[in-house]
Length: 159
Image (cartoon, rainbow, N blue to C red; front, side, top):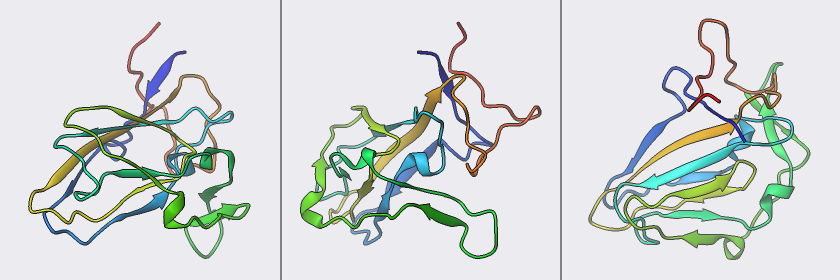
């Protein structure tokens, strides 16, 4: 499998820091909502720069959620995203925590519903994320990021 690295104006590789006692959370979402190929090939790469514990806001996911529907960019009036199908509601009991040690790599299928909870500790929790898709996979015109001749998606490596 060839991989292309998505780094659109540095908007798609991100460092997320949850400061200590931070009550903000990352809402549940699917990375393929914004980075869709047909067939789906998006992988999210999530690397904690400190230990990510349940208390500090580690990643949570819903097993099997990659088999459901997704949001797409709305080209008309109204909200920026619309639903293709119906987004199911998940109870807290359906989410599974993924505590991860510093610099471990968590790989997330692009269609898996995932989130992170609040950091309730006295230390910050920082993670670095980026996303990859298979090179040559048809890129959806509904995606928010679109390559151009001037700003193509650069490859991680060439074969």
